[in-house]
Length: 586
Image 1 (cartoon, rainbow, N blue to C red):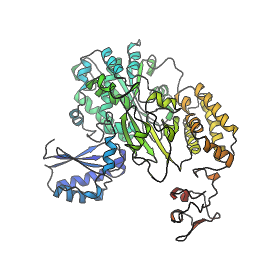
Image 2 (cartoon, rainbow, N blue to C red):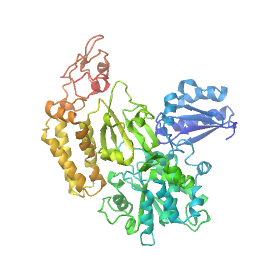
Image 3 (cartoon, helix red, strand yellow):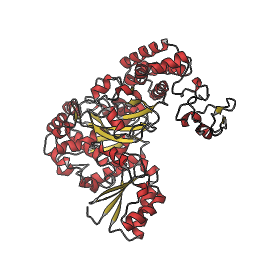
Image 4 (cartoon, rainbow, N blue to C red):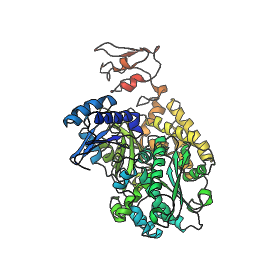
């Protein structure tokens, strides 16, 4: 990059576009053209960088980087007048120190290109080192590539944590001429958006990973199973594949080698159970997405009865750098038993929502209070974090120093999952959270096996009874026993892990359950049936926030006086509770 050219990077993933990034880019182009500065500035459309402060705009040159956040289309003229014309940053929208700290605490491998290159320009990817791995793999045998990936210690990032190289080895050794390589991009966890961001911001890294995997196992055909709710990801994947074919990286005799490989995109209809690999394969084949018992495993009998390897997006996005930089480089990152990095999607009551990539072994506390920035509302204490998606577990403050690795997380009763993290504060009812996730898995169950179809429904009924103030202490023993039975007997991974939210909240937040059951109170003031909708004067600070928030004028308040709720008018919408920082309404 020349000193004379400053690249203006505009984050245009789904998050950026929804905040007006298209218009921001258009306005910057108009300002550059109108000021006759095309020889000095170039607008580049990039994917989301991870921190959701859209629209993010970076001015990047050899002399450094300047970042603007929360840029709206109407702000562009002021930025242009100051930065383009005068060479002085527009201070009102400059990113602060917390923005820098968000990235300082990360080690970005999978996300290294996201927000840095144009995902629809293959030349940008090649200039960043893309497709350099192909020369290396074609100079080696498939077995040598498998050994390199095994030695790296890379485990599947979809949640199971099985050694990637070993999975490939099983498929490579399986009998049968035709084999398939499948990418699982069916990201169904509430609050998870890792796969979407990688596919939107760096689709070539996934394509290159699939080529490497296809070569290693001996497959000439690959499928990317991506949910149809990700239209931008699918669009950019199609663009990237067309460019890769034109360059000779996909198709017959890749890069002049004897190896041929191509990819087809299969759009899923959004069924959560299709994240399970046997249900995913059934969906690709045009059948209803329902799991089947294993063995045989897909490595022996998968897609159309042929040996098949399935890896998720994050796993595949690691591969090109492992091949280029070597197994020793990758295995040196992370901790014993869990090499490399992990991408997490931070959501909920945390200051910095977005994607974070940290080395394995980082503690939950270091992640949430480092790049995560801590609690969104400093007045409300951290209560828990849901780790591992709807089938994961809720962990309390006492476990914040747990290292993030497969063994340590499993010991807590949660699972690593694909990497979703939902942070909860004092306003969160852990009983209600567990009920929410059980309700989700009940709705998403395929219904094939009795433990999942009937057992989860029964657990949900008991959870509903508790949140309505009708629970009994013996319900807790019932939930523990039934949850344990479902985990042991359900057909697939969804059912095996679905009771985790209930079991972990009973284990770590038993006092909240007992409060609901014995005192008929919800300590977090969430469960509507247990709220009296009365103002507690010794907690009320007379601020009037509840008065202003009430949509039906059910709250009486005057300056310097306590608020009062007219129960005849109150609709129990909880608007007053949601705005009260002091939890003064019971």
